Amino acid sequence: MPFDSPDVKLADLLDDVLVGKTQLPDFQREWKWDTDRIASLLASVSLGYPVGVLMMLEVGGEETRFKSRPIAGADGPEMNSPEKLMLDGQQRTTSLFQALKSRRPVDTTDAKGKKLKRWYYIDMDKALDSAWDREEAIVAVPEDRIVRRDFGRLLEADYSSVERECAAGMFPLWRALDVGSLMAWQNEYNTHSEAGPVEAAQRFQSFYAEVLNNFVQYTVPVIVLKKETPREAVCTVFEKVNTGGVVLNVFELLTATFAADVEGFRLNDDWQARRARLIQRPVLAKLESTDFLQAVSLVVTARRRAASQVDGGVGRDSVPAVSCRRKDILRLKLSDYKEVADAVADAFEWIAQFLAYDKVFRADDVPYRTQMVPLAALRVLVGPSLDEYASNKMLRQWYWCGVLGELYGGSTETRFARDVEQVPTWLAGGEAPRTVYDASFEASRLETLRTRNSAAYKGIYALLMKGGARDWMKAIDIDMATFDELSIDIHHVFPRKWCDDRDIEPSRRDSIVNKTPLASATNRSIGGRSPSSYIETIRSRGGHSETEMDDLLGKHLIDHASLLVDDFDAHYSKRKANLLSLIEGAMGKEVRRDDLDDEGAPEYELDSDLESLAAEPVDSAYSP
Image 1: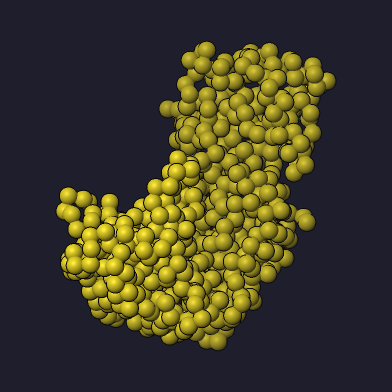
Image 2 (image 1 turned 180 degrees about the vertical axis):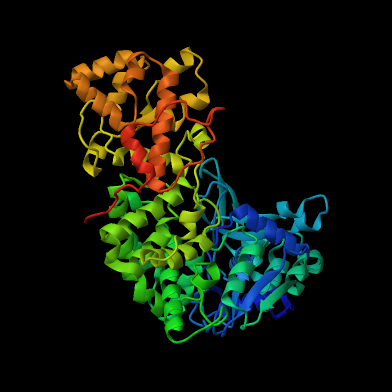
């Protein structure tokens, strides 16, 4: 990656900013330094201290045609097309430009973020006196150049005219790099200084030599990346060197690229319009712009790969890869995006229906937001046939293997690409995808599933509702409407208080094994009471017979008899076995029974109506 590393005079750098030769790529955030940081920066320059390296990119590269914008404050009529874009140093450059070159008050903030407009002066006496810290010599004053105190009631200092500045010995720093303006102020200072013309002239000479000359002669080290630098390299370099510690979002970089391709097209505006439509589905409320771009990239690269294979591409190197890595997203063209974006948006809406069938209604209950990315791509690539019984059944097995096998929690781009390549082949009669092959579940994992931090925890919660679990009081099916109406959430079967009073281990007390989806009103009626007590209350208030109550609990895979005698151990063991069978049914494969006793058999028999689930995936076809 070729680059130059010249030292640039500060005055020349700010001149380039003024006329637009140096601008910002559109992916840079707005500047945000507060007045104290600006004063500290000016103090460093006044002492000739280094303030860090700037990094820029030459304009004109084929891969790095980014939309640009002027540095804040540089908006005059003399603006030219940029020759360089600043990747690192925006805050420092903007601060110096506004304070030293713009001849306008600096737009800044106080330490609490309150917006301010400030002019910056340097106190000549303090700057020439080594007893003073240089930062104490830098003075920021309000826009009218009058300093007040006591909530504005008392006048502290007035620098609103050149005469008053000179009399106070307060040099305006916006004159430091303009020779004509500086000399004019010096003449006024010699005239209006309280020290008299001769002494004033001598004092200004000392001030210029020790302080102002540091501004005039100051040079800034700059690294200039050549225009041939690849887009991915720009992104990586920006993240590694950006002194503001800001991670560059691939979406922002692509926004700047697309804007350069077609003037007026704003990727962010396009995404916000799509997002406004998608988040009408609560389950998609946390979908991110990068999720959308990853799905777009998967579709584009998969189609590109398929076309290459049809055209006779052979060998690993000649066939494009299916990918949604950052470098591949950054290679997307605007035409690629426009071609598939509508279909991808439709696919995410379809996902909301897909998840609703599996009783996932809210964004907080989605096991893996990331798994929606390959699912959306698959919907676009395979099409409506995913709704057909056989295909939908297999797709849901893939989905639950990913959730219960907890396969989408780390670096996922490689798995996304494999899913997009392998799932369609599987649906057409080929081998099972790696996600199905890799997925496994150990019985002991149930002991550790205690919060929504786990995808498997959320998955079991949803599977219980999908299997027919109804609220015990209302005894109505849980769908999107009743889920919200009843405020369904996951609650303890044996209450926390009851468990704590009997020294039940917290690991078992809070495990998913001892939790189930219930309405908030039903949970309130449970309180901290024993199951034998609250079950009778629920049965009576709900008007349920013993048989109906037994059926309601059975749909939650809970043993009624164990609750009636408050036997936590029996309840826990039987429900654990039933949940494992439920998991086997969803994954279409056996769980690893690391909970077996010495004889190699579970302590309790599985419910007979659940044993068959282990042999065949749950009937999960979605019918729109």
